[in-house]
Image 1 (spheres, one colour):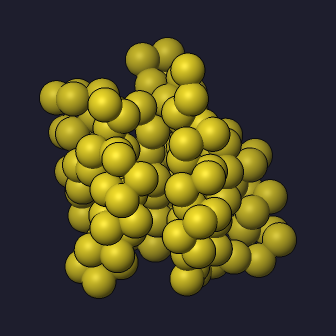
Image 2 (tube, rainbow, N blue to C red; image 1 turned 90 degrees about the vertical axis):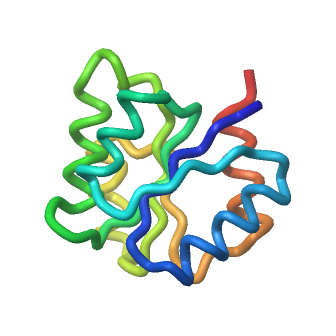
Length: 121
C-alpha cells in the first residue's frame, strides 16, 4: 500500500484531501505542523509527502528544502498544495525540490493523477 504523509493545518482541507487520497486507494497519515511531520517521517517513512505552505511555525517551503537536502528523505516525492499559487510560488517550490505544485482548491482528478504518477514503481 502507498502511504501519503499529509501536512496540513486546516481540518477542513485535511478531511477533503484525505477523502480524495483514500478514494484513490492510498493510506493517509496526517500532521498539522512541520514538527509533527518530522516525527511521522521518522516513525513511518511515507511514499509521498503532500505539503501545505502556510503552517504554524516553520513553512512548508522550509520543510520541502529540508526533506530534499537530507539523504534519508531526498528520494521521497513532495507535492506542495497551497493557496499560494502564483507562478513565483510555483517556481520557488520547484527550486526547493518539490516534485509538483497544486494550487488550492485542489482538483480531485489532478491530485489523484499527480500522486499516482509520483508513487508509481
